[in-house]
Amino acid sequence: MSSAYPEVYLVRHGQTEWSLSGRHTGRTDIPLTAAGEEAARKVVGRLPAIDFAAVWSSPSQRAQNTCALAGFGDRRIVKDDLAEWDYGAYEGITTKAILAERPGWQVFRDGCPNGETAADVGARADRIISELRAINGPVLIFSSAHFLRVFAARWVGLPPEGGAHLVLDTTSISVLGYEHDLTEPVIRRWNEI
Image (cartoon, rainbow, N blue to C red):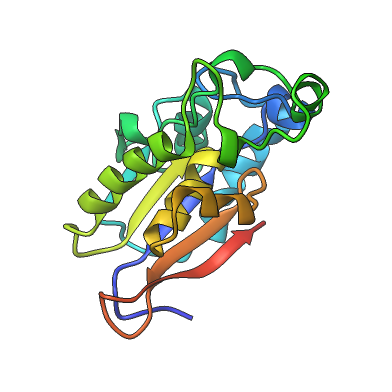
């Protein structure tokens, strides 16, 4: 169902070795796997035929390559605020390994030592949202799972920690928009694979 109001299409990057193994991949620049590249090429066929007013990407090569393989590389504008959560000391470590050392840990509640908290990521998401709301047209964004989860929570007015209740698979497509008017932001579709 399309809307008369601007929509924001979110694409999580394709599979990487670390996303496949569950390792936290924030600022480490991991390339796409062959399967991730193939899935990225199929993204364009899964999007409606829309003339996007803007195409934005995280600075990571996994997001930028997903964008390029999906056919939007020539329109891509890199936005530093779209970067994945900075996991600090937990970079490259699985949740299972973190829980063995720190039982009960949750990234959305506890953040990461020497990295970001949910509030830090939420502040970046809020800056992107402010920019988006000044664009009168559909926008396509390529980024990573935890950032996009916080972004969606902030879009609908939830605290950044609300992203804990949203899950995103690699190369999933989600759509944010509005319901009755521009004062009612909603999640229109989520995690379509």
